Image 1 (cartoon, rainbow, N blue to C red):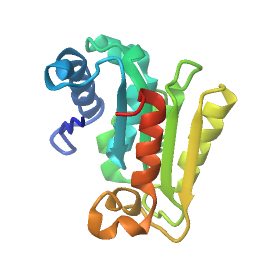
Image 2 (cartoon, rainbow, N blue to C red):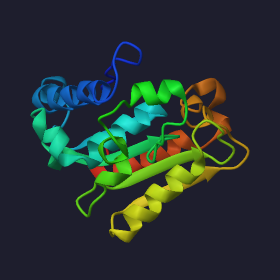
Image 3 (cartoon, one colour):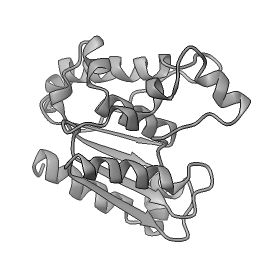
Image 4 (cartoon, rainbow, N blue to C red):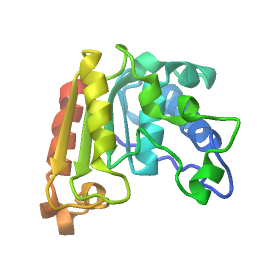
Length: 192
């Protein structure tokens, strides 16, 4: 089963409000997913681009999740699709989205990586110009250094949207994102 929560965006809100929305969603899923036939003990967080940031932030920042009534041990896996994990605000819009007094130590998901991180699958277009693949490589290397199960797949000649676009049947041929995601989810939750 999949739950697709929405979250507020800049300029309506700035950090940490959108991650708070995500944490509320995780807590809701943990409390209600069994009503819909889901398993609250095996949740996989997944997101693309900014959603990949939020998914990684929540999967790695255990204290933040607990603050909103969610149990980090229920997170069985993380799937990041072209996500930003080592974000450095380099535009006026990004600086307004991640304002002072917050710093990279507050908003970069990689800052919260530890040996309790869930198994992770990172999918990224090798030609992504919006979120450079080096961010996924850096997160992979950090998780490997912590002995966390992590896979990284870089898709040659693919840009920022290719990882998520392949979930649409008409362009599924562009990347193996769907197959790799399903295999990963099955490996961390058990076959459904």
